[in-house]
Amino acid sequence: SLKKDLFLQYPGLDIEVSTGYGFAVEEIIGNCESRRADLIVMGTKGAHGLTGALMGSNTAEVIARSTCPTLAVPFDAVSSDMKKIIFATNYSDHDFQSLFLLTEIFKPWNPEIVVVHVAEPMPREERKQLEWFESQVKASISYDKFSFALLEGEIEKAVSEFAESSGADLLAVSKRRRCLFERLVSRSVTRKLAYHTHLP
Image 1 (cartoon, rainbow, N blue to C red):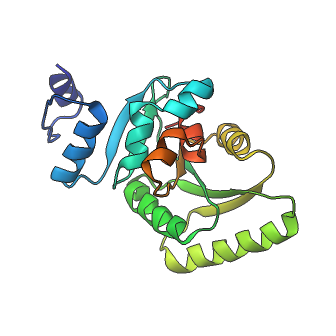
Image 2 (tube, rainbow, N blue to C red):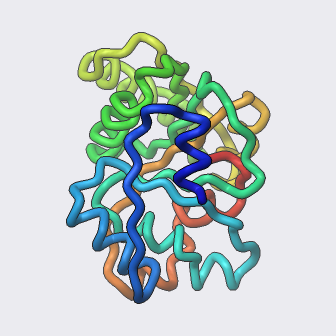
């Protein structure tokens, strides 16, 4: 069994196995809330094209609905030492909270956290905003391995290509609350990045 295999690889690990009946997303969200989970980890094969982006997978729906962070691990992801994490931002207040939480979760690995923003047509103004965001992050989050980058192009492509070309081990984005209809039909950046990268 999976539990036995994990015990053999990681002696002393505290593992609890639970099974349930019903819709996968509902069961996962319910377990997360009842157990007061700090993190959900899900494997995903992903989906591609318009159907995948519009309908979503169980993983994408859990990301959209969960109240705690969700780590989606693609089937073709390789194990890594978590040396570099890319965090995509659009400078919202929510991004400060997400970045703080990301730092707390992965601090034991001591990774470089690269905060990236994809520029609009006015790169000079975007540069000023990124510099402001950088100063706020450094003043409010006690961590000394941040770096910042301004990207250009279509956001999904620019972030995905930067993450892969820079040798990132993980790609992080924060998500915002949406109504049910928007969650089902949205081609949001969070969903699109979840589908089109092999990085966790």
